[in-house]
Image (cartoon, rainbow, N blue to C red; front, top):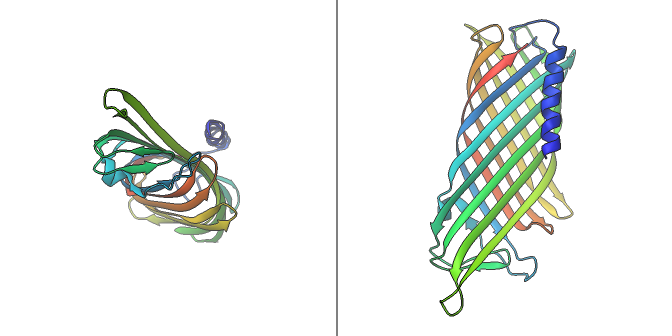
Length: 274
């Protein structure tokens, strides 16, 4: 994922270098890059089955069970108009969270059972990288509509750590289990941009995919709407809302079980346009 992340940033840099003149119209700009963060809420539900013991995992609501708070949240969006009606979009998002709580029940997670009362630390990491190709099929002076196809690369990881008493109560033992999955998923998209009075413009994006193949069954949806005030010729200030959901049943060595991960909330960001 680090290589892909570096490639994404290189694409943004190359596109910026190729922008031949300054424009302040988002319908004409060669490059539009948005960088910001989330004020989000999440919903993570997971069941991780044992790989060595074949233990059936419990359904765990990470937020309710552990009260995980937000720590790192970061998002980068970029649009590069290659030529005419053709453009490329890229997106990078990351969110790392962790919390410690005393369990109110026994929890089966992977090959371990975390007992009632165990002080357990939960951690979650989500990284999303997307590349898409868009084609503008309708364009007027004040708006454009585009359809696209692309790929989301999801890197999701969940883990539990705890220290519990040994069988006789006089010793301690460490419990540690984690599961992760890399899921490259194609998506279909619709995108729109509308010019508004007083140097404002609005954007909307809807993406969706469903898969039922081999060891994967699941779906992904990504809805995003923003309003940007073009404060200067090149810099804008934006607010928006994003709702991202995916759920899968997976049978893989590093993750056997099911995972539902939803996040959504307001966004605040700065755009740079050329």
